[in-house]
Amino acid sequence: MSDHETERQLRSAFDGLRRADARVTPSFDAMIARARVEADASRVQAPRVTTAPRRYWRWAAVTVPLAAAAGLALWLAPMRAGDREFEQAVTEWSRTDRPLPTDGLLSVPGAEYLRRLPALGSGATDRRRPS
Image 1 (cartoon, rainbow, N blue to C red):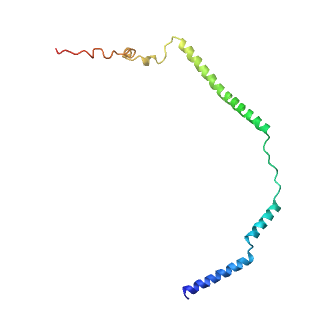
Image 2 (cartoon, one colour; image 1 turned 90 degrees about the vertical axis):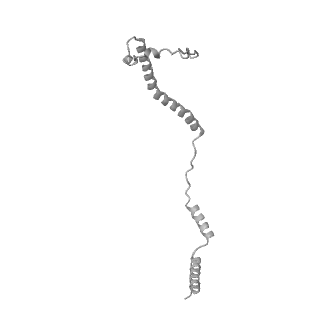
Image 3 (cartoon, rainbow, N blue to C red; image 1 turned 120 degrees about the vertical axis):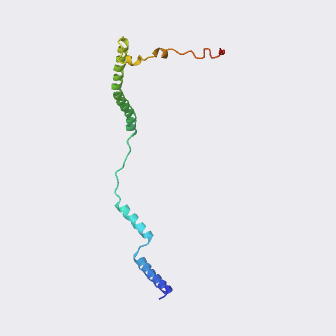
């Protein structure tokens, strides 16, 4: 059997399958029409979903920022009290003339030089005379 004859037989077999499928398969337009009819018949009336009236939105627009501000105030109140206590403790300690525990660490040799600026440039313009 040659390639030409094999191809002709395959084509005729596939054409026969197409004709058999076409006899039992409905047209595309008929399938779409049937699907629309079935969809209309099975459609259940869904409950109507409505959005909240405007007064609820206004209520939310007022209460949400107020609640956020109240929460922020409650959250920050303990921090402010702790800061005030610390500031009072530092103020009271600074009023005393007691030596601090770290004063000894600040007393280093040569500390007097750190308290004043050196005089730079004095005599820099004077030329030395050879002796």
